[in-house]
Image 1 (tube, rainbow, N blue to C red):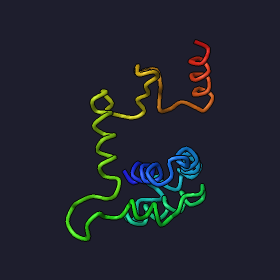
Image 2: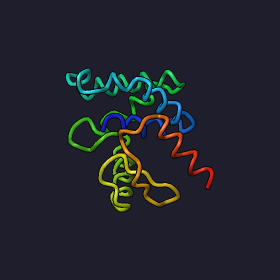
Image 3: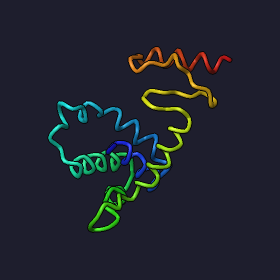
Image 4: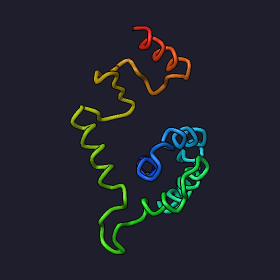
Length: 131
């Protein structure tokens, strides 16, 4: 959930940086695999993700502010909690229960697999562009 929240924080703070952030995050994804991140606290993860956002031109403090609790006590969520809830609700309504579930022009593409190589993704997308 931390990666999703950080992505939403970037989208809220600097929407034009969202795709650059996702590319930078993807390039460092191994750092967040269980074997490396198991002992990180939620706050540690947010700091690392905000640092990655800063490499693409986001203000690190702005991202951290959006990833901070709304209230000093209680369970009010963070600055992007409501946005995350809206995204989850939208995808549940569309029938998305696991990833990857890919939609093209609003139609599910069930042939997509989480095991696809980059070549398979390029072939899939090229095929869509030819039609």
